Length: 111
Image (cartoon, rainbow, N blue to C red; front, side, top):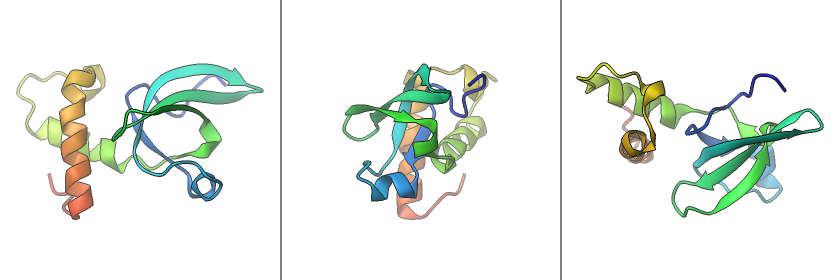
């Protein structure tokens, strides 16, 4: 697969069908892209809360990126450096992702 659907550092979730078949629910961070398996992109994931790692195929992941989208909005609203979100590393992104997760779990996705 030439263009992976997800990028390193992005927060993803397992698709509902994968969770029904035993995949863990909750937020996972893409740690690395792995070689494709029969044309299917593979990813190394880490559970945001526990740090546990696993491998998943692109088809097992949900395109739901609400947490990352909110984190990016929060970051950009308070960003005085003009450094784009995409160029920020995990040390800058992680606090914004945690804030976004907290806001979404409380039902307040306001920026």
